[in-house]
Image (cartoon, rainbow, N blue to C red; front, side):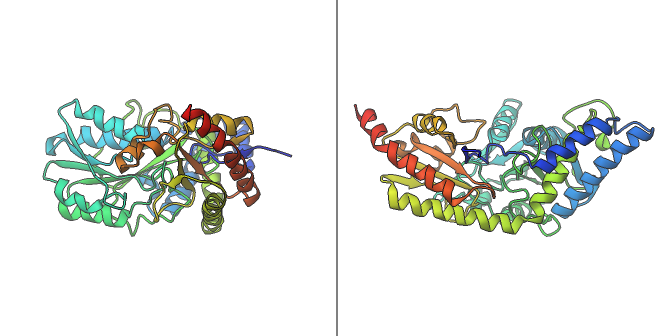
Length: 385
């Protein structure tokens, strides 16, 4: 029996067995280049076409609006750099938020060095992102607003309808992008109804799919420059031989996750609430940084008087896996997201992220809470010394 307790699903997930089997079959038997015109190539092309149709059905868009990438990082870079480079003549101003993934916020900051400018949305008194502040920030020169769907550290859910509609009302020539890596196949997304969204990033390995594969939705008639130059692959928007096994694996994972979206959501909501109940019962001097309107898949907890790294190392020695925040920024001493929210420093240093999966159980949560409760007094004692 597997004794490990994996509660770091926002960082990555264990692939479905069906995904592993499908990728293995494609790599073994359907190895032709999907751009080749012979039989082997046509077989590969059919896999890509099928996956495009599956993702478009889930997102309620057209198959030719799906561009496969190497993952969320590339999708975010392509969206930001592609819009910036293609629309410099109209302006060089970008609006984003301090809660974005490093692949997005760092890209925006880098573009600022190239005669660009950017503004960050602030938080309201309830420590929620203040979408209404767009009124003060969107201007004639704003070419892009990028606001993530679900924050990867706290789980805050952004009202995409409100944010994208407000953006277009203020400037109908401003493009709207959302990083939905933590939302895809976990929350409903209907781009036919959310018709003010122009670009959307997603990734395979957050939904029990393979690493190294993702996609970028690009709305028809969006003026965007390709990130990877070369051949005419994917409508001329991304050169390079397609990762057919990865695309096949992404399709399987998306199908499985989407077909049980509500069931999985309900399961992790129960686990999230149960974790908070157990914390109240057994732990002292902590705060919950996840807001009221949040994805149940993510819970951010901060304990006073400890260093999160020490707690993580202790839990890891017991084969219980959580994280201190986003896997791409966890080497930082303090969370930029929590700092921007105004969380007290005495708690930021002891913040951990627990992220759930539909395969997690209450029994696992019981063991996690028991281990945390047993070690906290010792950690606080030594830290005071």
